[in-house]
Length: 430
Image: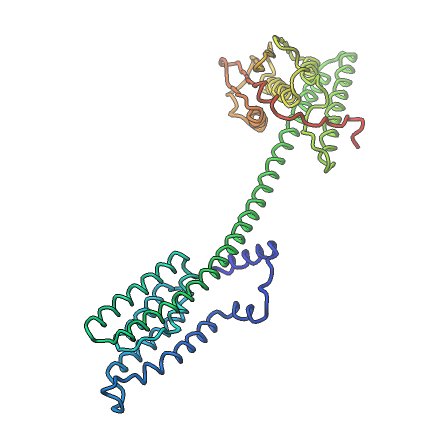
């Protein structure tokens, strides 16, 4: 594990506020696992080395160490040294202890060693409960088979074989039961901590996604408000500058002021929602007549905008609020693009078809100058808005000098969603 990953893990643990391990002694052993393993290995070595070193068969009593003792001593040392790796290699350590118990049985002595208890415990804690019970069954079965074979061959007294199986089996059973209890609790706590860390990561990811979505939403609304208003203001200002008629210039200047004032009101309404933490309303136009306002402002700037509405299920005011917002923004973006990219347009057609199941919004224009655009922030915002209400958007050229923006918006999908809270009026916005 790298220092960076350790630091991030410690920061995450601090944020999780994990409780301290109870007890001074338990905290000490938790911080020094190698020291605990060395102490356990020394205790097992002391308990098993003396019987192995002093082992003699009755016929050789008083004649010094027997060949069996010369084999049992290094086996005992090796098995005890393996305990230093019982956390990393629990299966190998368990097999080493089982080999030592079989060696003691072959030598003619039958006693259960501490190694079986410690290694079966380690197998249950650091491997799995299933592995611990499998080890217990394999160990007892192996010792039983060896004891029966040696007793049947007359190499070991039946009592010694029975003592070896019962003693070793008892140690393995005790170690397995304790290890299963401790291991299951350890794995359960680790699973809870891992799940908590996962939830913490998911919470941060959700916060980042929500912040990114909110930034995109604000950027989309800002673009829709500023882009259209500035396009109208530029067109009116150029017209007022080009004309020599003072009355027409004065009317154009007044229209510039009205357009700027309306844009300011929308900006104030939107920023008021953003400043109010308790406000849950979505960003939306100030009024329900936004489509008519867009058309009138474009006409005032000198563009030939014609709107046509076909309805079989009410008017725009009867639609859900989010759908009205989508319709208004689609018309606004289509007309704004026509004003910006088709200054010589002879006709800009806006078609609204309101049906019981879907609403079709279409903006057509001619007079496109230059190659068609691949799509900027405005068209990207339109796609996001149409996707939000479950609709379809089709944008593309109709002819070498024509362009069309067409959207199909389902009514039923939007009606199934809860109605948002209304925005405060511009006059009430601080």
